[in-house]
Image 1 (tube, rainbow, N blue to C red):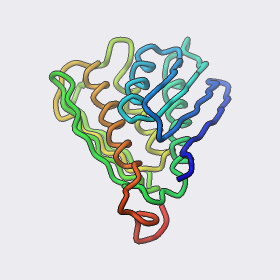
Image 2 (cartoon, rainbow, N blue to C red):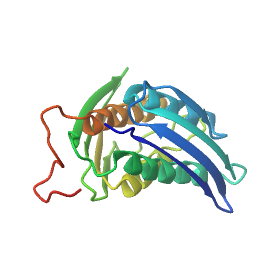
Image 3 (cartoon, rainbow, N blue to C red):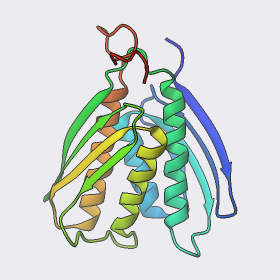
Image 4 (tube, helix red, strand yellow):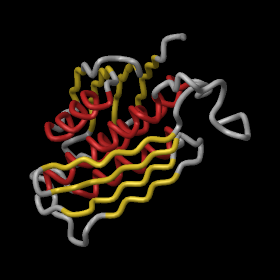
Length: 196
């Protein structure tokens, strides 16, 4: 099996991003986005997906964190799509329930080449300190759009904004790990269309 790796640089007037990843890694990461909470989320995403991830971002955080978060997800999605190549031999589907203290989150993913995000959370979901919950949704939307996957996330319950965000990132990581793993019984592309 060939290495499932990818790297990309993306420079705009708002962000400068360098990202490299190994889909078949061990969960090692070096993350520096200029947004400490986001660094924490991406570090645990790497750890629980077992994707080796190196990411550095120089963004306009003096404006706010939006461009840094969204653009990072764009590049991450594009690199994951590249590393998956034609998706031959993968499981394609993955799901995970992840508890985080009082919070429980479910994530289901289909590496279908059809981008769709469905994120459901309790009304008035609290923010993590210094990180709006709306940015979690923006990250998920940009990731789904650029990885071109169906991504369904539901926060079943929770009260603490940090725990809710963490459960979302961890459940995405575990679901993605399962979906992108090679299935030893699978020959070819997991679709009757024979293309994904």
